[in-house]
Image 1 (cartoon, one colour):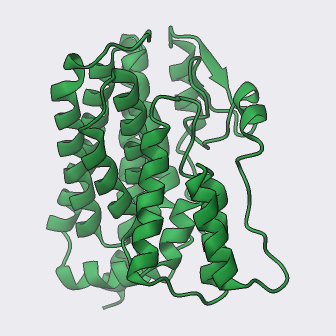
Image 2 (image 1 turned 180 degrees about the vertical axis):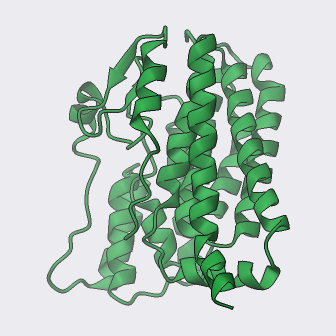
Image 3 (image 1 turned 120 degrees about the vertical axis):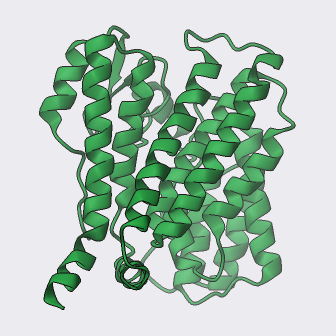
Length: 316
């Protein structure tokens, strides 16, 4: 596994010194998130008060021993029906690792269940519904699980009636878009995901003011515009890389990274996204440092992705 990392801690530390908003520090990774966050914006771990209440929900793959794939699959469906997203994903992962091949009907049940849980929990900011989904999506290479869930969230979000529901749902959409960088390895696919994310966030921004207002210190419209800005910048950097790279090399790179699906480019994208999100609370100096940190991490992603192709060109 390639450990992508999170850029230069020194610069991020300098930025935090000038951040006016109170922050929570994650006990697992040390990252500072806004004080009204329910979970760490970097590693996804719940803060102490939330982790205790969600402990019964977060489960891991049973692992070890012999797994009955059919039984494990049905256990996953039972768990998703009661809102246990991570438990369902763990059981489905066990089933597929044990050789189960989901039918189109199975896949539709999985997809509908995932979207239902995310949407139904949209009024509860403490719910974190993405545990294990990227690993499952990688295993299910005959389907587009991540982007299909995103499409379902996009369509269902049009029926939400409050700003809080819309914001929590768009948070899930944003994190899934970032998770896609662990699943898809073709830059053209990733550029299309960024373009669609910009469209979704812009559409949400157009209606957010008409919804029931949220009790929050942060402006929902500003956050949606921030999300849109981030994926626009990321998409532009990917488009630029595509335009400057031979199509044959791009195809080889896609195959290269597909064989290394455990390489988590999403970690690097998440770090850049966090820097961009915190621009909302930053002062002038904090904004300058955060922008540099964001762009540095996005440029690092592009450089790392293209590096094997550059080596190939040098050899030929």
